[in-house]
Every structure is written in C-alpha cells, then in structure tokens.
Amino acid sequence: MAAPADLIRKIRRIEITTRRAVQDTLAGGYHSVFKGRGMAFSEVRPYQAGDEIRSIDWNVTARMGEPFVKVFTEERELTALIAVDRSASQDAGFAPQAKAEVSAEIAALLVFSALENGDRAGLLLFTDRIERYVPPRRGKKHGLRLITETLAFQPRGRGTDIAGALEHVISAQRRKAVVFVVSDFLADGYENPLAVLARRHDVVPVVVSDPVEEKLPEIQGLWPVTDAETGETALLDFSDAQTRTAYSLYARERGEKRDRIFRKLSLDAVRVRPGDDYVAPLAALFRARARRRGS
Image 1 (cartoon, rainbow, N blue to C red):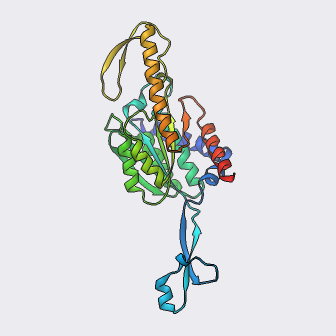
Image 2: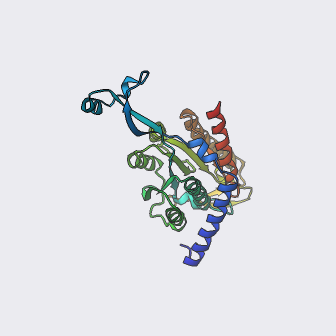
Image 3: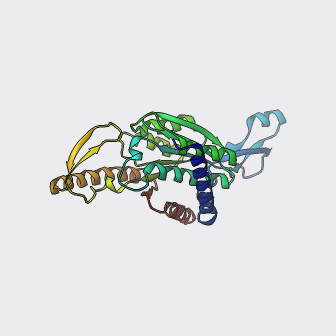
C-alpha cells in the first residue's frame, strides 16, 4: 500500500484532474443522458376529466367521499454505482500503467461526475468475492472516501467472479441506478446476472484491457508467463509462429464472446487501454446516447 503522504498526493492529483475533466469535457453530458430514471410520488389532488383511472388513490377517495388521484413527477436525482474489478489480473500486463490504476482513475471520474450533478454515488470492489461495498450517498466527503477506498485498497482475493459481483448489486441496489461495471470482462458465467441487472438498471460496461490480451509482445525466446490469479507459470516461446497464432486466435475468440454478450443485451460499452485518454470515450458514449434519446 502507498505511504499515507504518497496516497494523499495521489488522491489530490486525481481529484484535481478528474474534476477538471468533469467540468470541461463531461459537463452536462452525464446528466443529460442518465436523467429521469423513474417517477416519484408528489401529491394527491381531486380527479379531473381525462385522468387515468389507474392513478386513483382509493384510500383517499374513500376517506374524502370523492375521487382523488396520485400525482407523480420525474425523479431528477440519480444514483450511480461503480463496480470495479480488483482481481490480481488487473495488476498484470505489459503496459506502463496497470489496469487497476486506470480503473481507479475511471471510478474517480465517474464518482465526481455523479457528485458534481448533486447525485448519489456508491462503490463496489470485487475479486472472487465482494471485497468492499459502500452504499450510494451524496457529498464531497463521501466522494473522497470512495476514491481513497479505491486507491488504497488491498484485495484479499486473487480470482475474478463478475457474476457474484453483479448478483450483489441486484440484491443491494433496489432503487433504479446507473451501474458502471469496470473490468476486463474476461471471466465466464456472468451473462445471465448481467441480463437481470440490465433489466433493472442502466448498465454501462467499462472494458479496461491491456494490449497483451490481444497478442503477444514482439520479443524473442522463451519467457515465463504467470497467471496472476492462479499463480501458475508456464514457459512460452514468443518466437514460435504457431504459439503466437494460437494465442491471437484464443484472444480474439475471448474478445468476440464478450462483445456478443454486450450486443445481445444492447449495452453500450466504453473501451479503454492503459495510457489512453479515458475521458474521450466516456464523453463519446454520453454524446451517442444523448443523440439516440433525442432522435
């Protein structure tokens, strides 16, 4: 874990950079896309010609002796829940910046996007278990707590259970929310819980991937390759054409499977690599969704 002084500096840097990104690039985009997630009860009033019969409040009607209807207004407040994969594979790869660090900064950006709009933000950190769950709340102090939790966190588990994390969100988050799931989505068995979650909430997959997940690096000779989650090590000959072709085929099939799931569930995925500008793809997502809502 980073020393307290280093951690404080890092939190401050991320707070400044993400807040600037929210204000300069994402201002309004987040809220215009995700606003109005449900209807909230406002008041009862006397029945008027043309009112829906289904809106009659029968208890008040019986008490007052004349028909009254319930009036609902669109909820302006949002709830954003950011679920972040912190399995050991998030610290693996050949990129200068680990996927775990990129995911933490994306989580910070999403937290500040929500809080800047006066919405509530919550956090779920998971590996092969639920590591930490912080229920959605408002406020800067709460936001800084979420960022600190994400950056300072040291997971107990090493594996990945995306399905378990999604099931936890389904049970814990009853109120409709925008759920950002930040992961490489390379685990199996999450399609069904993702489908259930998408029926109840507005789900946005944020795919954080390392280039090595698509093809082997251009290096020569035998190299030990360790599975970060299981600890198993094998020697791979990076010079062997057959090995490189087999690896690329496996990687492509794995990525295509992930993409098929997203298409089947009509989910808009944001794709980020370490070193990329992760603000731009989020802004592009917000613009695309806003266009669709307006068409």
